[in-house]
Length: 248
Length: 221
Image (cartoon, rainbow over all chains, first blue to last red):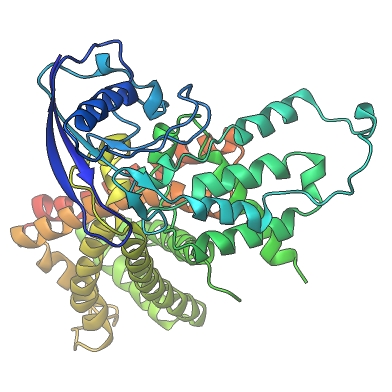
């Protein structure tokens, strides 16, 4: 099949970018979206042009490195998938496809489709951990955790930090990401101890990075590759309000 | 206290829920307009007089004014911050396909409601307080008369009906969104509150929409 691509090309962080047209023929429907871009890049190399840069790592849908806006949707037209798990069978022969980086003031474009997601790291560094003395692993049965609790914490911890929630949010809010991190720790006994401080620190950091407000449109849950529930945002709000009321 | 995004949203939720509560009281009061004409005039004017003289109502009305202003001002501040957070726009944007139209356009809906409120306050609130209204048979200001006469005009009805539709869609997202902001996260109750929000929005919207139409078609004075 043949596609008409419009790809965002930008030299570096400070430069102005623009959409460039590419005509790509000989695409197999079995290719992943990233393999299609690889093929285009090889052709660009043969022509002596600079390749289109994009983030990727595992290409199994579990690392969160890849991510771009494809035809105006985060990670492309499918819900609950990463860009690497999107295949060319989701497109029609002769279709025009717009490819842009995830956009948010807190996600500056580094080059082409590559963005800087350090702001997510800063939110984690602000409180996404537990303080514990290291040493020998304690006896596992000394800390009983029910199966349901484990599963609920895992559901939140499944967040791969790809940034699709921010990219698809009309306000570029990081509420789903931050709440997933808050939730997965607050659900477990190890994380409960620091829950009040953690949620305040992480929310403060989220604001500092310049993310917007959550309007509860719930678009993030639809585009999230891990389908993290928006109810975590409710849980974060609950713990944040509780922390504000109870803190000394 | 540091004003975080979550605190801004809490102010929106608290003022919004108070306004939701006020709408119920307002609608219940307005239902008196549906009584037979003579009865409605005496009843409605007596009710208006009762409200305007009550100290408790006075206090609540100040909370109401503050809530309205706060809700609008914070909405503006939030929108400004969100625009800044968005940075560069997408060249091709289909993000709207994964969320509802009203949830993304609360600002537009709110602006329509705000314009409506200016007209609404001018025509009834201002007239009642500062305009020289004639008195009815029992010596109460005849608010009923100006309500009925204003709803004889087709264009006036249209403004009201459009505003109530905007209000309905605003409530449809706003009520549930406020409960999420406050921190309701239990799946069972979150679902129940959402359904309650739908029913609430429908009843409030239809209730308010019915009254002008009823007056227009039944009380052609």
